[in-house]
Amino acid sequence: MNTIGVVGCGAMGLPMALALRRAGHDTVGYDVRPVDEFGAFAPFMLNSLAEMAQRADTVISVVRDSDQTMDVIRGLGLDRPAGPDARIGTLVISSTLSPRFVTSLRGIVRDGVRLVDAPMSGSTFRAKDGTLSFMLGGADADIDPLMPLFDAMGEELHRLGPYGAGMAAKVLNNFVAASSAAAVRTVLSQARGLGLAPERLLSVLQTSSGGTWFGDNLAAIEWAAEQFDSGNTFGILDKDVRAYLDAVSDGGAPDALTAAILDRLRHVPEFPEELSKNQ
Image 1 (cartoon, rainbow, N blue to C red):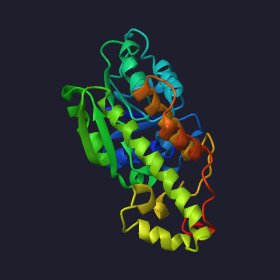
Image 2 (tube, one colour):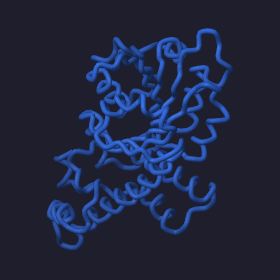
Image 3 (cartoon, one colour):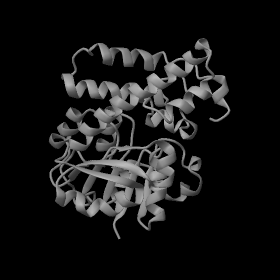
Image 4 (tube, rainbow, N blue to C red):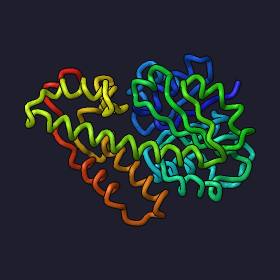
C-alpha cells in the first residue's frame, strides 16, 4: 500500500489527513507543532520532513505560503538529484499560492517527481466532513492515480487542465471569496445604523440576490467573526488576494477594486454582537 504524507496539519491539513485514514489510506503527517497537539492522529505524526521523505510515496503540502512550500521541498530533499533511497514519486500542492510560483517549481523539483496542483475550498467544516472542492491541475497520467485520495477528502473535483490550472482557478475563486467576505462583514456592521437588526439583514442576504458562500454559511465558518491578523484566516485571504494580483498583473500595483478589497480585509469592521452567539 502506498503511504500518503500530509505536510501542514493545521485547520485544513489535519482533517484532510483524518479523511484519508477513514477511507483506508495509510497516511502520516508532519507539522512544526508538537506531536501531542494532534489528538487521535498523534501516533501518525512524524518528527521531521526527512522521516517523511523515507516513509511517503505521495506528499500533499498544505502549508501557508511560498516560503513554507520551499522549506517543505528542501526538507524532503526534492530539490536535489534523487539519492539511492529516494521514495517520493508525487508532490501535490494544496496550498493557495501564486500560479507563477507554482509553475516555477518545475525547474526546482528534481526530475522524476510528478507535480500536481490541487488547491481546495470549503473551509474547515467541509474539510472535517470530507466534502471539500478541489481544483486539479496536472497531466491525466499524474492525476488519475490520485483520484481515490481526492474522493476521500472532497465532494466536488474539478479537473481543469495542465499543471498550474488548478492554482489559477483557486486564486480567481479566492478573489471573489475575499471580496464577498469583506462585503458581508461591511453591510452587517452598517445594518444597525440604518435601523435594521443585523440578523434580519443576514436572513435577507441568505434568501436574496446578495447571497454569498460566506454569508450563507456564516454560522458554520469558524473564522467569520475574526478581525484581521496576519496569522488568521483574514490574513490568509489577504495573502490569497496578493497571489491573485501576482498572477494577473505580474506583481504590479493593484487596480482600484483590488486595493479596496485589500484595505477592507485589513480593516474589517467589528462583527455584530447580536450574531456572535452563533459563532
